[in-house]
Image 1 (cartoon, rainbow, N blue to C red):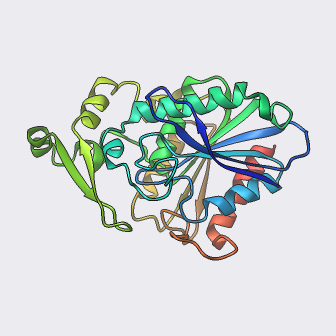
Image 2 (cartoon, one colour):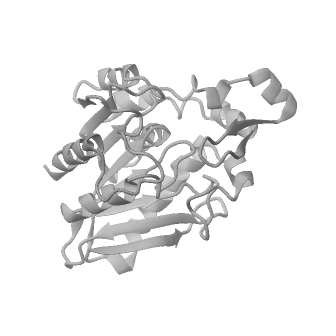
Amino acid sequence: MKVTKNILVGGKHQKPIVTDVFYVDDHQPKKVVIFCHGYKGFKDWGAWNLMAKEFAKAGFFFIKFNFAYNGGTPENPIDFPDLEAFGNNNYTKELDDLESVLDWISSEEKYKKEADINNISVIGHSRGGGIVLIKANEDARIKKVISLAAISDIGSRSSTIGDLENWKKDGVKYVVNGRTKQKMPHYIQFYENFKVHEERLNIQKAVEQINIPQLVIHGNKDTSILVDEAHKINSWNSKSILKIIENADHVFNVSHPWEKENVSKELQEVTEICIDFLGN
């Protein structure tokens, strides 16, 4: 298996998109899967590397990346050394980053023999789930879409509208990262960007217009984003498939750091369901 980490893909916003690829180096074009992490997430979180290897073993060309403004850097893609970038991230930048990764794999000569660029699917976790649902409706290169423990609505998130009065007054609000204990800033531009692009950022509207195969996966023990949101997403597209993972929390019972050699039973189930859905 070929694993290349921390490739710097050019983005639209002056920061590189730090990207990994996993594939079996057999010079056969493989279906491409692009994975998007969630809020306060990153491509190397928990067991995502193990999951990526499972996809590669199953015959996919698997890509995962850090959103350019997620707070990581090329030198340190795991912790959040660049809090200024984190504070200046927003939803449309993330949509642009996903588009840049689609552009990159569609034109990258190096992987021409390995990646079937006419067969690209996207998977997003949590907030990344919302991003892939919107992008799947915007970009015809995407042939299938999977959301894992996804948000169903951007406008109601506390990161988007919480403590709005003080946020407008101060220009910034902070969220504490439970793992690193950092106070992570959100500048008011995050809210302003949402308001300007509110129509585009309507997940319900996007899902109602999706006409490619769609899979919705959620754990029934998710306390961060309740399983009701999965039911809503599923209800907006009569052709979408809903899979509820029993006893699974928001991250399918893995954590960071993940020192074990195998993923959790729940994440293994998620991976198998995804591989089956994308393989057909």
